[in-house]
Length: 153
Length: 153
DNA sequence: TTACATGCAAACTGTTTGCAAATAT
DNA sequence: ATATTTGCAAACAGTTTGCATGTAA
Image 1 (spheres, each protein chain N blue to C red):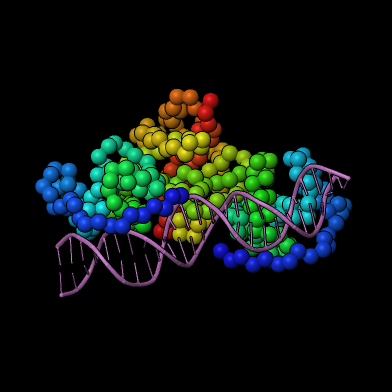
Image 2: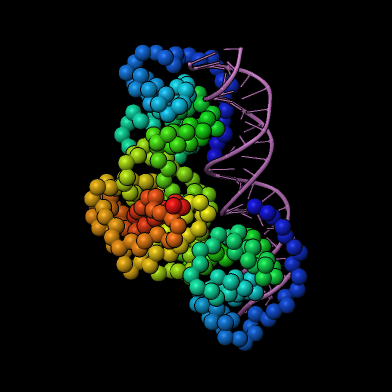
């Protein structure tokens, strides 16, 4: 991990600027009880403006840097967790060390490529898991997760 | 994590002592190209003498301490990885931060209790995952893993 | 007697936290 | 005005590594 921080500069983009993308996210954040700050809006845009994505905190931080958005890594972590708690993201556990955040919040499953650590959605609608025994006493099923681990052929 | 180390003392148990449990593990280790050292044998016994188990490195290290077996945490990690490479263990990824090692090396699935971080085997024979799309280009399926995440009711 | 295994400390990675400064309402 | 959010540094957890010492063959 590379830890490069820049001094925070003045706020150059008005958070309340009237453009359709912002309007959209401002509403979603407000609904989640999150103030639509410059950082959160920028991260929301990076996360959600392209289709379904699987990102680590570091990935998103790097994207923010590349897009000249000044956000600290700590804020990226905070934001990802807040978005997850708000139901805007899901977290996916694929491999020991790092956590992935998935912009697809609908039930679905994943291919996981061990070689490059990449996650790919499996459309959930077609998949069925049969023969599951009932959960142990006192607990109930929260979610069934299928991970198909891949090797290159 | 607690890091308590003791000075290594003299070897009190002969590795080659003739008892059926040792004989068994000595052979298995040899077959895997691993020298049957005091530490490896002790860990093997802790791992395999009771039924199926899901352990972290820390868990096993604690058990070793409790059993008055002197092993460093680093050696526990090494040993777990070597055993996994040799097919004596499987590693299971359930949650971001820690890795579990599973003494059940036959294909099967897991319940995972988020509250207490405990894994429970699901007998694999009954479970079937239907409707999987073919893996992406150039890759093939290595393993299909089902994790049923539990909540207490 | 030599190649391998161990123990420890220190490094490393991903993540979280404490707190002062900045910002949203 | 005040409650929230941010950035940074430092802490933290789990894991890995380098190297001197110990042990198996």
